[in-house]
Length: 162
Image (cartoon, rainbow, N blue to C red; front, top):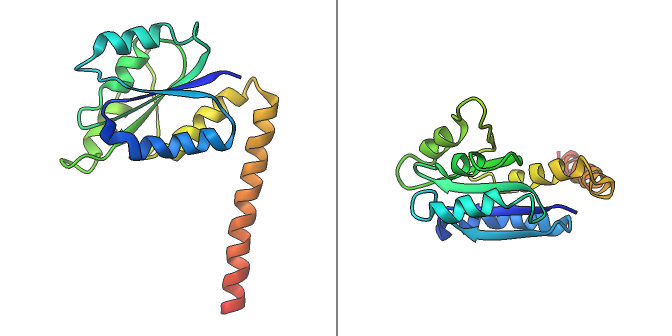
């Protein structure tokens, strides 16, 4: 199975990153996480992403707040799928990060999830890997069915109360 690379611009992003890691652990997807900054450690970002395919990665998730150039810097150095997760900061509630992450030039795509959308980033990474992994595809289908059953159970409980 391909691994998921996780890069966060700062360790302050760890609470959002943990949401993605929890999804990957639940689905038994191998991952590796790093703190690399697009601005402060550009060489490490470049080295990691340029060698990601050869090192067994199938997807990279980049978490960053404020200027949030990390996902773009990652995508500029690989043709692997890159998922950008804009993280809330104290300035503009994450809107600055969202716009920086989603507004990529033609030819350098970044799939972007919601502000602080770590769980969906983990799920999207899993879905990308599942395109070539039938066992993971089945796990994702089962998870989706289980999630639907939880909602229906809540509805049934509500109907009893009403």
